[in-house]
Image 1 (tube, rainbow, N blue to C red):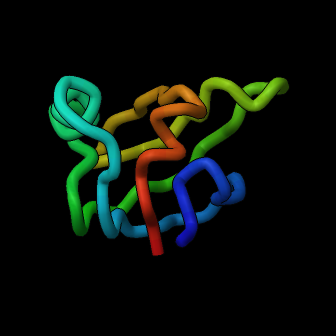
Image 2 (image 1 turned 120 degrees about the vertical axis):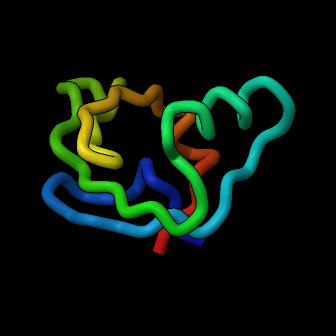
Length: 73
């Protein structure tokens, strides 16, 4: 299982599954990160948190803890 946190800068991946429960999972889905969506990793902050991605045509910053809940291929 590969998570969004493990993806390198410049790669594009597809969302396979969202882990997590309740409000956290709902918040991630509300940001446009759903199964089958392509995500491009734009940059990672110097200490690794947050991760900046492009999803559905807009830029989004994610915490490392949120990125670990997103399974990709």
